[in-house]
Image 1 (cartoon, rainbow, N blue to C red):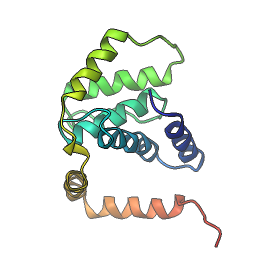
Image 2: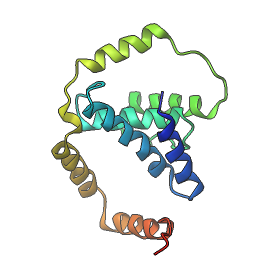
Image 3: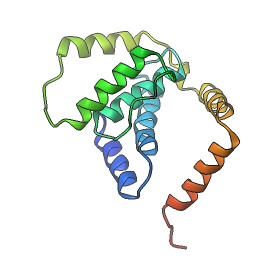
Length: 151
């Protein structure tokens, strides 16, 4: 369950007209914080990011599943399930056994996945995979949707 503060920040991003991926970034940030404080671990930065995105989709962020061919079929199906869960208003108590099993498995993972160097490497790799035009468009949109600060 995401923290109340994270949900608030994501809703604020939505009100400001920011993209779903930006809103989901709040959940990823929370996940990194959990790993750093020792709540649980992750095998890699990619896994930590995936957990955050899953939480975002389940919390109702309109973040679609990745396109076919971008990720494995299992990942895409899980993302689709998470998205459906987040968009439907049917509330059901989570399975305590499954929740406990997930927590126990994550506690056995390492903490270095959320280190600054690991995240830096992940960011560099994903930026390099994108084209310059894509990065330029993202920067332009960021400047348009940046919250106006009074000076």
